[in-house]
Amino acid sequence: MKPLEKSLNPLSAAAACCCVLLLFVGFAGHAEQGPPERVGHDPIDPPEDWYLDEDGEPLYIPVGFLLTWQQDPTTTMTIDWQTLPDEDRDTVILYREKGAETFLEEEGETIEWPDSERTIHRVELTGLEPATKYEFRFGPDSVRYFFRTMPNSAYEPVRFAAGGDMSPGWRNLLYFANRQVVRYDVEFALIGGDLAYADGDPERLERWYDFFEINRETLVTPTHRVIPIVAAIGNHEVRGGYYHRDDHRRREGIPDYEQTDEIRELIAPYFFALFAFPGQPGYNVLDFGDYMSIILLDTDHANPIYGEQTEWLESVLAERTDIPHVFPIYHVPGYPSHRDFDRETEGRVREHWVPLFEEYGVRIAFENHDHTYKRTYPIRNNEVHPNGVVYVGDGNWGVSGHREVHSVDDTWYLKQASPANHFIIVTLNGPARHLKMVNLYGDVIDEYPKSPSLADGPYVPTPGVGERR
Image: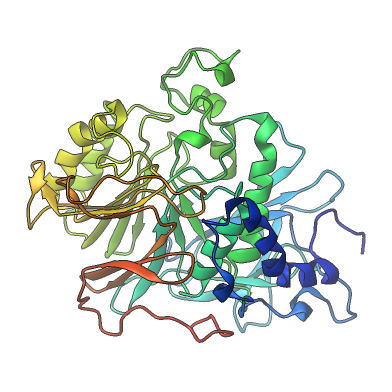
């Protein structure tokens, strides 16, 4: 087998298994943000022989891959992977229901990665069965991975992780956050923007390479289940951060903004190439059976908040009033925990979207961007109200630097706030929902509601197992 640049072999697999030790070196510059020694070694690394064929030769692993959905998550799966120029690989996925004897083949398409030598391959599998495990390979010489389709109901607990602002620039933080997420056996990760902090800049392509490398190593369970990612757009996916920044130095040579596919691809070239969903225009909705809808929104990055997007949002919400769990997620918070409440984008979220959330019965909205943790009181008509919307998050999945938060005592809308890195474990059980906020140590720093009405509570696997059977 021809050696593949950056592809994982037994030596690199062993290195990956030991990388926790090496990552502690990275804490030297950010000691106050990194997990302490008590995190210790990672007990859920996969065995080395997963990466070897019957003759002990290394199996193929792409330099990067991503699973997501473009359509019904109960019956489809979209698989992206990347190849280098010297890799002669077909755009074909081999897949089968786990336990079946024969692999099926599905061909896909290749997509140009702007400014990069890598090629993106994309295959969408359709006609799958809900709540079912499927093995897949990137060719006959590839490691076998698998995924789970989503269930078509929430009669049994459904669990996912939510957050934002991942940033591979601080590899140690993102690595440990992802490893903690995997321990909860989540169905997918929901990210509210600022993924690689590459800013649409060709000189920062390495940040995307690091993003995919870290997620390849960490958002895969010990038994090789790949955790899909559903991602919204943030300011660090866009040249200049916001659609109206035509004067920004990264927009030199780009025509002035117009609300078209062509301009959006120019100002956010990597986001639209790398993520099949939300696709154009940069906001979309994903429906999970008849129990959950996730609405990905764009806070003035590739699209204005007002106008077309707000009109679309109202129609989406009006069509889903019978869905028990409707979760908007977006980047810039309407109720910030670090930045100024009166900033323009924050104000537009409150002016255009918050009234729609309240009118159509949204109960939880995920916000990001501030690099802190926050949970608001339930808010309605711009005041605390028992039937209001709770705004949770503020984006601190894997970024470094503890930012000052607004005083909970002096900020009318804040119930909880801290500078902690965190992600949110969301568990649904029928009409009930529970949010558990977890830091990089694995400690629970907050939960909502405090006394969840769930049948079995959030599942935490035994160390070394990490996968619900």
